[in-house]
Length: 81
Ligand SMILES: [Zn+2]
Image (tube, rainbow, N blue to C red; front, side, top):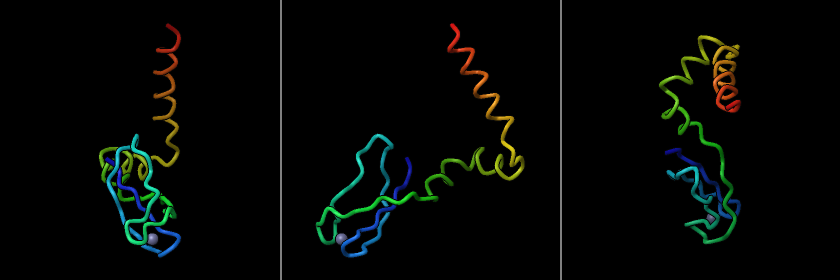
């Protein structure tokens, strides 16, 4: 589950929350109860999730053409039928 960072534009309260991707984003600040939350993209969620392949792949092959063409090739085959 990814971790999202929120920042309140009213009181500058900053916090992180674990949410499903399908969950709606939070709007109301738990501190000042204003609808002024701004969701930030948190890198920590992706690091946890992607430690298996994303980080190593990015470091070793910055082109990342190999994995992309492999993925699109597979999906094309699926689409054809
Ligand atoms: Zn607030």
